[in-house]
Amino acid sequence: MEHQVITRRCACGRICKGDPPAGVLAATQYGPKALAIIVYLFMGQFLSKKRTAIALSELFGTPVSTGTVATATARAAADLDQFISQVTAQLIASPVVNFDETGLRSDGRLTWLHSASTDKFSLLFSHRRRGVAAMNDMAVLPTFTGIAVHDAWAPYDTYTNASHALCNSHALRELQAVTDHHATSDNPSAWCWADQVSNALLALNHTITANPGHPVDPATLDLHSRRIKNAITAATHPDGALGRKHRALARRISRRLADYLTFARNPQVPFTNNGAEQNVRMAKIRQKISGTMRTLTGAQNFAKLRSYIQTTAKHGHPMLIALTQLTSRNPWLPGYP
Image (tube, rainbow, N blue to C red; front, side, top):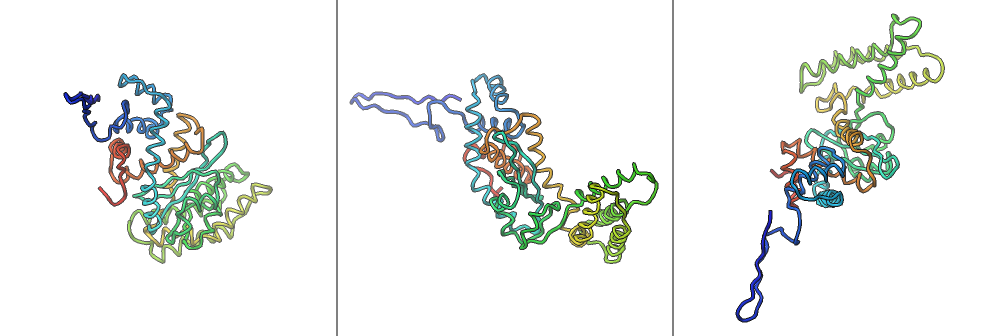
């Protein structure tokens, strides 16, 4: 859209100049909708920076450089500080939060993308480290007192103010590996302890899904808990490194069975932390389509913008509309329509 600002010299010699519309601050600039489309294609649909610039240039007949794409993205991310602060506060106050992390290459090295989420909020955070230092900087777990749902990675357990529930999808994958190894053994038709543990976990989950919003009745929970414990007690393991791995899995399930079965006692706790995994999965799609991040700052901008895109989607806001609010310097905030 073109705006013309007229300048005229008065008969008295004074020069009078019209005022530009609100938001027009330069002789040439992109408006909020154009900037929103840039972010939409680059961070929402995962086009590369170059392909985003080419697409916009061809669609609108206006030259767009990769520098413009980078600048628009950086400015949009910089306007999300208040949003990130409010989402962090919402997560800290939530009774149950899913946590996960995955590798994200940036600046030619491995960095980490951390995830905290509920059904209403998503927070992604990029950091050089995977462990406690990154979790502290993310600023959710240090003051979180609800139930943290995560895999069995040890750094999560250092946050003792929170209760902990372990992801059963991770456990089932590990148990399936034991079952697969057993199937190739000399006696594949024999009983396998991992099968019995998996069947007990799945039976409890079926009970929950068949009666949503209610805990498993104590008798049923006790029955399947004993089946898990008996399977682990009777388990046999192969020799060597693989056997040590299988024994470690059996010990962990035995030691932390209460954490694996939290979902059966508390209907608010999910069977898995797949919600957190789905949040970080977009990073893998991004890398597959458009490659790695060139800088840590770029990875951090990606995390902020994906937090915004995923959270607004959970609240029913179409991506392009939410991004237009953001590029208008008025981002959607939690608690507001």
